[in-house]
Image (cartoon, rainbow, N blue to C red):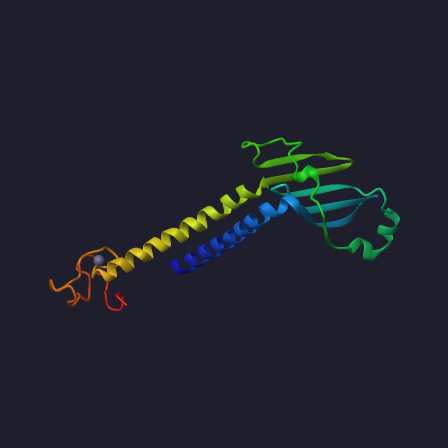
Length: 204
Ligand SMILES: [Zn+2]
């Protein structure tokens, strides 16, 4: 059970580290190559066609998530009602050269404890309702890298300490001196008398 929990935790840390590396790469890149990945869907709600858009975008050192829903005035409700294909039409993915300013930009900010920090915004853009949240990529990197990097550092230090103890003839767990004789290259005790850890195979 402990092993499974540890394995799952390391998987989560691995994913966080992957997000952190992606953020680190996107941070400088976003300044001259802002982009958004968007998916959109038309929905027939009673007599109106509603366009629902959801997007992830980056630009000017920030990454944003947003949702935008509004009436699609150019879409014909009769077509959508009559067409089973239209009514069943699923999500459509596309990329655009730039994320919209309401998502990534610094204006229209309602909540920002660390200026220029995390920003969340809900409001109206034209005739559509918008909800958006954005975060600087360097902050995303710090948030996602902190736990896995601390964990890896601690693991490395634990390994280095047990290696050091093994070469010095000490118990890898508690550091108790396991030399059976004063001879520096002499035999080692097979079991630590202090904590009970078996030393067989540990010194290799
Ligand atoms: Zn010990």
